[in-house]
Image 1 (tube, rainbow, N blue to C red):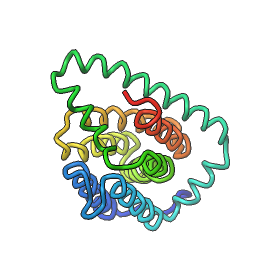
Image 2 (image 1 turned 135 degrees about the vertical axis):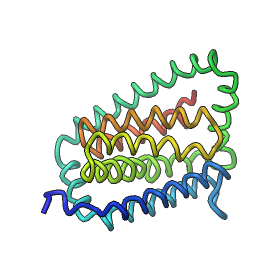
Image 3 (image 1 turned 90 degrees about the vertical axis):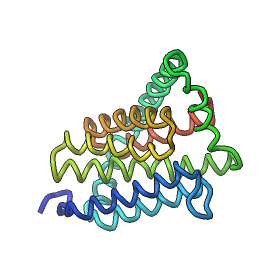
Length: 217
C-alpha cells in the first residue's frame, strides 16, 4: 500500500470535483446558494468539501499532521512572503488591466461588491478560519494531490489549476476568471514544489484577508 494511503478511484475524484464545481458555479452565478448569501454559501460548500476529502482520502489526515509537525515556522514565513509577492503581482496587474481592458474597473468592483450586506467581522472569520484554509485543503491538498498520484504531478497541477479558473466562469466576470487563473497557477506551483498544505494555507489565507479586508486593490 502507498504510504499516503490507497489511491482514490477516478470516478470518486470526478464526482467530488463535479459537485464542488457546481456549487462554486451557483455561488458565482447567483451570488448565493439557496437561502444562504455568498459568504455563508462559500463557507458551507468548502466545509463540506473538506469533510468529504478527509472521508475518502484515508491518508490525508496523516499527511497533514506530518506537514504541520515539520518546519511550521519556516512554512509560515514562506507562506506570508508568498502572499505578499502575490499581492504585489495583483497590484501591478491591476494597473496593466486598467490600460488593456475597458471592463476592468467594473469587473473588479463587482468582485468587491460581494462584500455588500455582510459584516467585516463575519467575512474575516469565514476567510480566516474556513474559506482560505479550506480552499487549499480541497483544491491543492486533496484534488491536486490525488490527481497527481493517479496521473502525474504535472497533470495534477494542470487539471486543478484549469478547474479552479473555470468554476469562476459562471460569474461572467472576466477579471474574476483571470484572477482565479493566476491564483490557481501560483498556488498550484507552490504545492507542486513544496507539497505542503500548511504553506499553501498560510499563503492563501493571508492573501485573502489582505486583498479583501486590509488593503483592497
